[in-house]
Amino acid sequence: MKTLIKNGTVVNSTGTALADVLIDGETIAAVLSPGSRLLGFDVESNVDTVIDARGKYVIPGGIDAHTHMEMPFGGTQASDTFETGTRAAAWGGTTSIVDFVVQYAGENVIDQYQKWHEKAAGQCAIDYGFHQILSDVQDSSLTAMDELVAEGVSSFKLFMAYKGVFLSDDGQIVKAMQRAATNGSIIMMHAENGSVIDLLVQQAVAAGNTSPLYHGLTRPWQAEEEATHRAIMLANLTGAPLYIVHVSAKQAVDQIAQARDTGQNVFGETCPQYLYLSLEDNLGAPGFEGAKWVCSTPLRAKAEGHQHHMWQSLRTNDIQMVSTDHCPFCMKGQKDMGLADFSKIPNGIGSVEHRMDLLYQGVVDGKISLERWVEVCSTTPARMFGMYGRKGVIQPGADGDVVVYDPNGHTSIGMPETGRAKTHHMNMDYSAWEGYEIDGHVDTVLSRGKVVIDQNAYLGAKGDGRFIKRGLSQYLI
Ligand code: DUC
Ligand code: ZN
Ligand code: ZN
Ligand code: ZN
Image 1 (cartoon, rainbow, N blue to C red):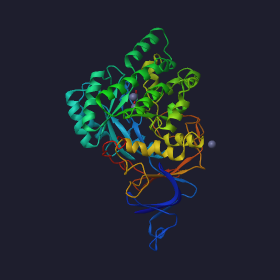
Image 2 (spheres, helix red, strand yellow):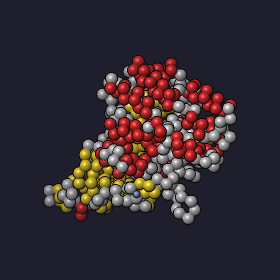
Image 3 (cartoon, rainbow, N blue to C red):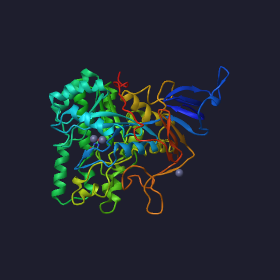
Image 4 (cartoon, protein in one colour):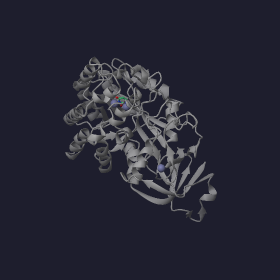
């Protein structure tokens, strides 16, 4: 099966050019000047399918390196399964995810890793890899880290918050970092000071401050900045590369930037919610509505300038990439567990379908360049997590993961009330992005050469997606 995507504007992180893209089977075979003949051989008349991308961008498929499909968490389970979540991702131009295997305290890492393979196998619409969450860092967890690196799981997430659930103490963190420093893997960190947050939450609830608003108010930026700094110091001590997940506070960004300026391998990820949404959204929400935006790290105050600083840091590479932290819960039956007490609201927002669109709007609004859009959504995630070459770039030999994006199209996000069609495909009964309008549209999505989204039709199937055996990070020097 050969496909020619002709007349498009091919955008890689390194530059933009009018070009035709020839895909042979699952792989990009050639990037050609438009309408070219190869030694007199007419390309177009020798392919099975021609996609006309005139006036559209042809970009490497999005890579969302932070998702939680069907994760057991907060007394419930994230509402997207591997099937529904990866299908929604495809609709939004994302062709690979990296999801988190969870090891809670007392569990065996390798057992959990195998369990996650069982959950995902045969279910996914697009390719998927795994990071491994480590909670208590047992001796067996350290040997498991080496085994997992050999399996293509070269990144380990630790938590400085969530006592009794995920939390690792500083000694456990150092142990895992020491191992990462020797086996070449990268440490991902949830950087919030958990004991400070636990105290503030207790005090708020005791004072009768139980509405969703208090989620954000009990997770102040100081707790994020402090933990980010501490994580950076522990990484410095051990020599481990460090990737801070879901950065929301501008002060945490500045900690990352300072460490990078000294030459340390420290990286930052932010998420669409920290670029667009704010604590004020939550303040203005009536009743329990604010539960829709309960996520950790929390949304920050726009009046303090976090969102503006985040866009700027994304542009200047103080922050390297954007993932969603897709961790969806429904309002009914899940978020409403916290009706009487905000601390019982499962933490998470679902955005896996909207990341490419939301970040493209940043191009339209002049916040990042077209090439930077591709870089933060695809190329850097590929390099950061050992997939580059196969993923994250349009070049011969890469997987045929390609999105045709229409800058003249339009996308309305959300789930408008009755009478209008549901406009997302995630398994959620609300949208955190209700009312967002995007001046662009995902037209066609190919996953390893197969068209999975064609205009407004899903042509893929569960089981199309394969496990990505990742290498070590290609972003380290
Ligand atoms: N951290 C995550 O990365 N995802 C969901 C909740 C959390 O705290
Ligand atoms: Zn986290
Ligand atoms: Zn997460
Ligand atoms: Zn518009």
